[in-house]
Image 1 (cartoon, rainbow, N blue to C red):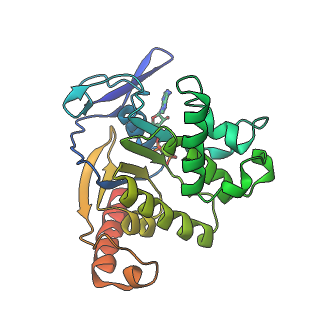
Image 2: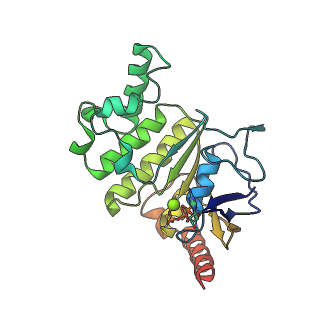
Length: 247
Ligand SMILES: Nc1ncnc2c1ncn2[C@@H]1O[C@H](COP(=O)(O)OP(=O)(O)OP(=O)(O)O)[C@@H](O)[C@H]1O
Ligand SMILES: [Mg+2]
């Protein structure tokens, strides 16, 4: 598929010739330099942007608008939460019209438990740390019980320890729910640690210039995995690819 924007009457093709298939339950990372088209690709997968040519298929069905099966966690989480709503009511936002009060309460409780936010249900977003705010964003996606979770640089702005904890939480959630994950990161180590497969976007218009399969076992450990020869090899291969992409 391809995606173009028209700016002041000029057509700018950002993505061209993109073709990829993602399996159910797979964790796929997208990397590439700033401005290549990573967010554009993710938004197209989420049905937020429509491809100029080509189609996005989910279980063989074409869709071109947001669906409840595919939920996006956006890049700028600070701005995405409603400051006047409590954590609980930020999380319930996407489902409160659709389900009964009891069902909403149940689903929200589950999403808050999965993101370790049970104790903060009545806090307002600005009373939380950055890592907690990001967990609210994730809870908001989980409450929809999606089949596919799309994450745009989900842990980019967080300190290393919080980030490591959230990475492991995400992998644990994936194992529990079986959802498919597609995430963007600018951090090569994070890409290899989280993903089964990493897509490198490059060129202008951008295409998938390389795929790196990490070959890591599904059980990850912040220390052991990062020291394993497979991790080091995948990281090297990805870093080389990104260096070539820059030159
Ligand atoms: N709505 C839009 N209208 C016009 N051009 C756009 C629009 N959205 C994105 N672009 C252009 O598409 C290109 C890719 O943008 P995109 O946000 O996908 O990059 P990115 O890889 O996510 O970058 P970053 O790593 O900085 O987040 C950029 O050149 C950008 O200017
Ligand atoms: Mg982006």
